[in-house]
Image (cartoon, rainbow, N blue to C red; front, top):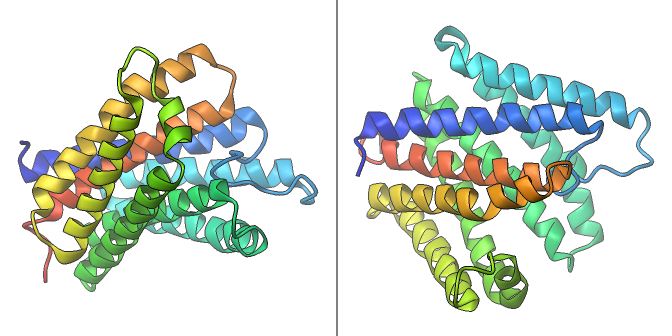
Length: 250
């Protein structure tokens, strides 16, 4: 397993790359990512707002990479995803509570926001441990929700697994178990470093063998690019949690 500093640097890099990439997707596609931020087509100046949001995400990611401005970048990223949660997802969840896709998008946004909070907490002098715990709990809740979805929609998830991998349902349930085990581990703060490291590796592997081939086969499809970078972001957040497991204040 990696040491803490390597976990932290890798996690930060993966998360920042993902935030910047999602920002670029806003601009290149001329709209908000359909799954991650399903903005209504009737929204006035939708394209302008997509460009603005994407540009701010890119700025946030770049600021995180500059040590002097890391806190500003992490805070900006957290605020952007919080706004997406409150203005886009909460109304849609309330309007369509039985729509599984909407729950997925909602908690993907929550999880990436949680990662930004963890980044912010890691470099904050005051209240850093509270931000880290808040981000970790939010990410954990997301994992539990995704675990439930893997159970409820097992056949749908299994159909997404590449054909060359045997026993699709087995892998679906294994990932479900990993989500539950990791989420509980993070919440109770037991075996956190091991759980975070393994979960980060799992997301990275699935990004490479599941999402990357789908992107290559559908290079002009925004949703595939977005899914790839969401998976990379989740890998990074998991590594951040692993790296902070023995350094965060209790």
